[in-house]
Image (cartoon, rainbow, N blue to C red; front, side):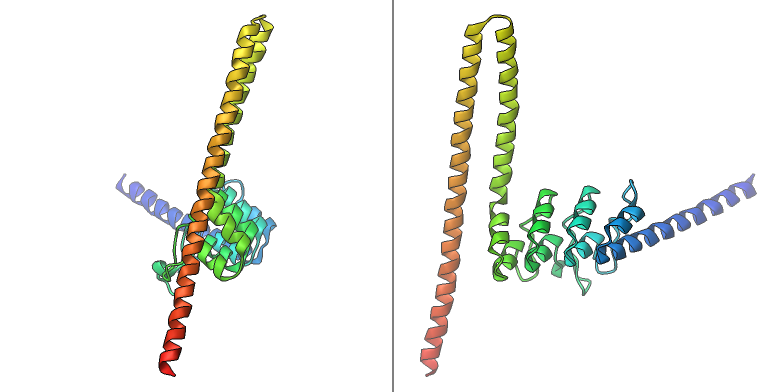
Length: 245
């Protein structure tokens, strides 16, 4: 009995080792296919269970990072559909604190379509590199104003989408009640429910407008502060130049 138990334990051990090696092999293959932008190969390797999509090399580069690096939007979309973690920092020196997330990388390179996909799948725009810069900062430095604006506006976009989604659901509910009341000949209730629906739409429109105005004011304030910092830096440089002369 003891010998049989030992044999089973040994077989289980080697089975686990074999499975781990197979998982690593698949992960590496998905990684390389993502780097090449080979969507068909990525799908073939990952399968319906999305195997290997979260594999990382020694510097924490993932298939998502590779697909982002080489602007393979279709591969990025597939990987995000597998619920991969979008906020892993990858670095060439092995220090996680110095790494870049896929969102920062896409913003730095000007890949607007990938930026949108990453944000919609949970990428954190507030994460920073060791230089203290966010994805929006790198996009601004690179002159990609469309990306900077989209990232800065995204919280407001999310809020408006959430509000309008709730409005749509509420209006569908009100419409159902109107149809039901009309079917039963209760025209007074029809008018009351219709009036309630109109009031809801007006209130939500006001809320969305206020949110948008607040966001624009905040954006203008931040822009003014950045311009003030740039002006002060330029002024200091001029003062130093005058002093040296």
